[in-house]
Length: 260
Image (cartoon, rainbow, N blue to C red; front, side):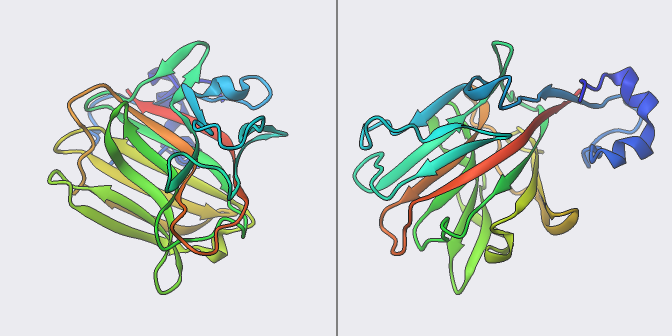
């Protein structure tokens, strides 16, 4: 998909924009001419692992000679084995950031971005009583994630988004039951405005075109007054849960749009 310029967006029209799923941010002033500009559109065959700013693949060297993040056909694959370690009590095999043509796409203060992709989560990727994070938004080298996508075991396996308020209080937003979302390709969409106040996070999940989870919150802190935001994908989980298995996550059709 070619980058959407302001002029192109006007020609596209409201109906065309809706057909592409590129809806206006809820805060947008209709008088101001603006559009979603496609900034990041990597392909496995053309970009490979260069699609990311960096990789965190077995940083502790616990599984020597094994690559856990790689291209497989039309998607990127993130493997996790029960023996993998990233510290004494956890595992991490993740990519970080968005890069294309040698340019790192940074989410800056008060910018609004939409990030979309398709994910495949197998049955072996179990919801856990501790943490199993499959997507995070973080500030480079500063503290914990601003939001996290994670399957959690409560009374049943549930896909949950965790967000932080300005006072670091944690809020859980339930996307839906985890099991029906597994063993198939799920469309994932996040929209965020990176601000201390006046920011927002919205999410949308679809299964074969049918909405299976959506929500929006403004009670979230999306700026840390330092560096920039960058997304992470893969598997980051505690070993302090029962039932862990060798598993993986597949991702394809990454897109990153900036509202400008």
